[in-house]
Image 1 (cartoon, one colour):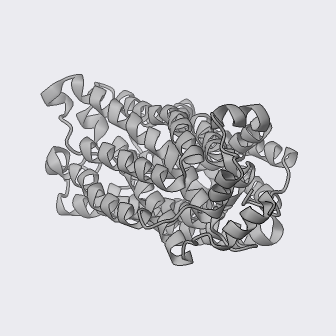
Image 2 (spheres, one colour):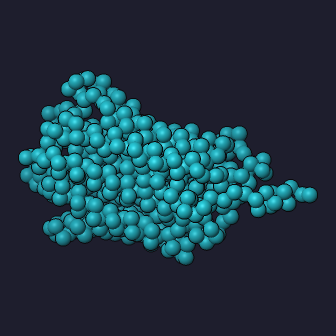
Image 3 (cartoon, one colour):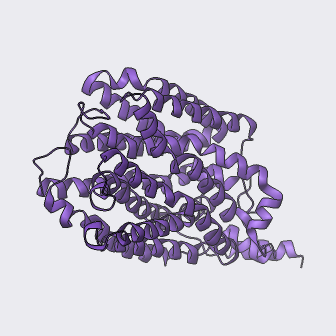
Length: 451
């Protein structure tokens, strides 16, 4: 009997994950991971400038908080290397469990940290360490969840299945910000530019500690998975690489570069609409660095309305990418992102209706560009280096796009004297880089993902 026959026979008896389990396992993990990340992002605006980075200039404290937020992006490629190595050698299941545990423990411990007032510079130092741990974990989470979804997808449905790990981003945002909103409502502040003393004292810790409950649920789901057919086929063929990272760089360096730039506009848009927008929306119109002047509760509710469109159009993007192809779909969407960047000032100058339109358009485009990435990036690589290759592309892009985006945005906001004009131009330029990469790339819809 030939080796091909052996593999084919083994494939016929391969244990298959039920579709409901695949969807839940890929969705619940990224929901938890993004929840943890959004909890930090919100606290980076509301809490940490007051408690961990005291400064006479509020803008300096905010920038310091954003710098720590961005520092975690530097740890993400390291996480991609570590967890990618495990995922390509030992399997997807055990790696996903490890990434989720790391993220959950780091987030829980942030909720127990002392502040600058009680521990001095030890407080921000510990915050940096735990933030780096969060980034390290997220570096291994996304690609594993995307592989669980796409490697277990039925024929012709990979992009549809690939949207479910992406859907964790809007769901995580709504849970995280909804919880902060409830806590802030229970601990109201008389100063709209600053949370209440009770919130700053202990209320902000609740969302971080609550992550432990979500992690337990995520672990229960993921322990029930079986390995994908693609990974089992690789094992049977003897295709496991000794060092997947070296193999990926040696044979698939072009795909890693293209994948990195595919994600660039997505990352910049993502963090401008979630992190920068919260700072800009809440800044007083009379402040040294003026913004829109909304109170926290009002603007977060507006953001949540926008994020609903994020979730809806994440799901919409899957059938589009399966029907028209990933590349064609994303070329049109990325072009729209560039035009959106040019429309920031007209929209944000049009009052509450314009601001709401800005949020809805921005988050709609976010869903449309983010959704197909769950299938596109894994499809760039063969199964034996897929976890490492897709993870590196996704997370190196986080440095170029997300790590510096909030910092650059605040600097451009300041440079424009409070106008968001240059921030929108920055988004448009990053979209052009992604557009060039998509034009240079190839369509991946019809590749055989099991090999």
